[in-house]
Image 1: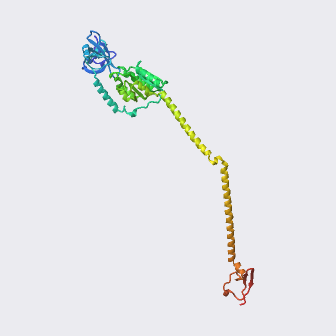
Image 2: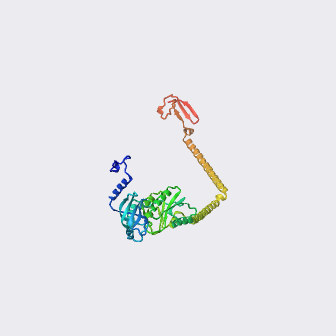
Image 3: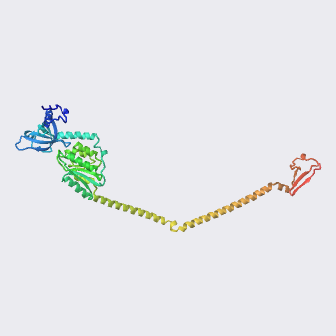
Length: 409
């Protein structure tokens, strides 16, 4: 008697596992319960055999590398018109189905509609406003391009005209320009992951100082990958200045708004990333000529100034300055001697005059005229006769000496 199988996946063990058929049927039952739904994607493969009622389509996500197989009736494809080709974006109304024999999941399409340009434009406008509100388009975020980059990173299509335009025009302007080129898909479902991977690789290279993302012109849907949100955010996060050179002047994918510089064409990008060697040489020659003229003018000015200095009398005959100063010194010395002699004479006269005045006022001069000074023996001058005692010994001073006397009364 066989052991009954577990009812739930959680009940299985190494000793009591489910066989493959059971798991496949369980998955099929689970998927069968799913309701039909609308799903959007991009057609990357379309297999339609003549006479077969069913066609097989591979529907890929427009953002990441994920895809599902879709079976669709040929009448549904014919209803979309003859323009349906790989790369077209569509919405599909389908029922998920699990093939138990192969263990694969696919979608059974009931309806298929192309995504209109109007819908895409509305979505792009919404994404544009969202990115602008986050400040990813602000001019303050733009990084300046180096004047002469060490190495230019170039992301372009394989063997594309855009690569030729950028490389040839850049080297025509500056022949020594070096490139790090990454050739990637620039159209179709592989564009976003391949361009993003190349961007990360070049951004991490220290010698790359500017990165150009380039593609030639194309239809609106051809350029949609360059408005992809994940790619735009990767460009915004890059540390290296990014130049967007997508399509022509009238093409404006969202990459143009977030890049540090928008070039109207790949050729225009070449003109913006490096200077023109001929123009720089002409500018250098002009600067050298202007510098030489300025130097000559300065030398002429200094030469004239030196000639003016040399023409001054003091430099023409240097001894003149010494002679002039010697004469001035002699004059000053004579003037000082004269003034000193004059002052001494005046001082001598003043001293003589003062001596005469002193002599005229001197008591000795009075004594010489016959006057005498009478003093007591102790030396006090007698000015009153009442101060004299009879027979007192007095001292009399005259012009030539002194003597003693005694009054008689």
